[in-house]
Amino acid sequence: MELRRIGEYVWEIPRHGAMRVPGRIYASEKLMAELRDDPALDQVANVAHLPGIVGHALAMPDIHWGYGFPIGGVAAVDAEEGAISPGGIGFDINCGVRLLRTALTADEVAPHAARVADALHQAIPAGVGSSGAIAKLGRDEEKKILARGAAWAVARGFGRTSDLESTEERGGLATADPDAVSETALERGQHQVGTLGSGNHFLEVQRVDEVYDEAAAAALGLAAGQVALMIHSGSRGLGYQVCDDALRTMGRAMARYGITVPDRQLACVPLASPEGRQYLGAMAAAANFAWANRQVMSGLAERALAAALGVDPASLRVGLVYDVCHNIAKLEEHVVDGRPRRLCVHRKGATRAFGPGHPALAPHLRALGQPVIIPGDMGRYSFLLLGTAGAMAETFGTTCHGAGRVMSRAQAKKAGRGLDLVAELARRGVTIRAKSLGGVAEEMPWAYKDVADVVDVVDRAGIGRRVARLRPLIVVKG
Amino acid sequence: MTTRARDPGPLAREIEHTADLGLEVEAPTLPLLFERAGLGMLELMIDLGAVEPLERRAIAVKGDRIDELLHDWLQAILVDFQARGFAACELAVEELGARHVRGTAAGEPIDPARHRLYTEIKGVTYHQLAVRETTDGWWARIICDV
Image (tube, rainbow over all chains, first blue to last red):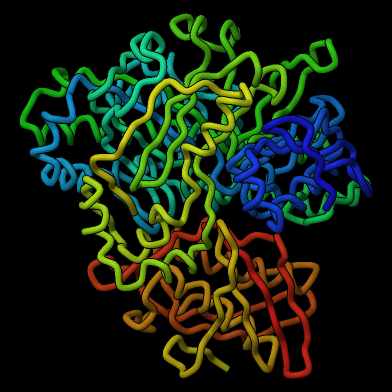
């Protein structure tokens, strides 16, 4: 595949075959060297075939081989004439990350790490098919979650109303259509609100380890040495089923719309078609489910943390720094070739990163830009960034989402064979609790790129701005 | 025929995929391929050695193509596992036509106290999904999102 370097951190795949636009990848020379023979580059070219795609098929520096879209892939399509592709969002609709500040310091938590880890592990169901954080929901109640998102959880005492101001879309997309969600999807979700799941999902107690912009960090309520909570999870079985239902429907409907794509996982239909509208309504409902899920978990975590430390929850002064989604499609306005256009931006393993002054940001964030949370691997660190004007100009207001895998799960398990994972993490100052240590082996630090390399690229390329680095103290996984 | 998780020999082979889980399955017949693929996927999620065939459930799917049938067959097993908490340790394809598959799963409700759980599979993707007839029988490749 031909690849041209067009900037220090930008590479282009020229249009060829039936590509409608060129591909564009943000990467350093080091990251690109690891990518040269990766099927992810072919996947960028495949995404460029989507009807109505505008600008470039983009990939962030954490790009890696996915199914259909690469992970780290971004495609903006015209809202009137473009197509929606569930594979450009993924099975885990609104998989995302939230960061909560606390009034605690790392020195106050460290002596009680084992007790806090046990309490969090007990309070938040994790693992394969985890369920039961709150009683099984009736269909009416479940549909209320699909309609209202995080606000549903706040109304039930999980977190506070101010959290909604610090959540993308205030934690609920108004376009949600609960009736577009299948009975099977509802069944898969009915006992999963407030559950973490497995794989790369986690809850971490972290220490703010390094601050790059003290004023911005202070404006977000963070300073070095402070303890924060990070939660990474999504829409659980409900979202997975919404994706599967849509892929099946669209795979069959494509021919009717005269659409062909190089990979069936990229199945898509016009946004304005009945199938497109139905998916958009169901996807928004699943996104709302995910926001409710993370909101419930943060409430449960706050209570568990306070109980383990024997203090009043209010004394922890927990507050949401921000909640981002990194698997979603959203209708947004962007300037393309000097004129505003209504676009549907697919982000699969990529994070919205709106710059300062964007009207979608709550008043307390408007001067700063949107906080962007980039989880790393559990042995090293994660980052807090801010969205930039550069991201608005170049990447439809988008930046990276995480470290990106370098090893397959099987390779990671093989590399970790014979190693005491718990002891290895303890050596790094991390206390871990997990349902399945086999699952943890797949998620070990060496399975991932160094997230600092990824963040360095977005910072230098101007599509994100570093604010702080956070190191894990306690990790809870499925 | 019935394929049991405890039958000797591998059900499926894990293949390299950076982010997700890939499986390759071989079998002398198409029904056996479906049975092995189903159990091969289940054994990524649960230790099938501890699952007993205490209950039977019917599985029936319809599709236009053989790869679509395999996808839907696996997805039905996945939904039974995740939404209904049912783990199968035996699969039997009773009827396999050009546009439908009908079979039975035998297993029991998942009990986290007795059953060791591994990876959560989010969905069966269409990415590189393939079912082919070979000189020795049938071969399939499946990539699951985890």
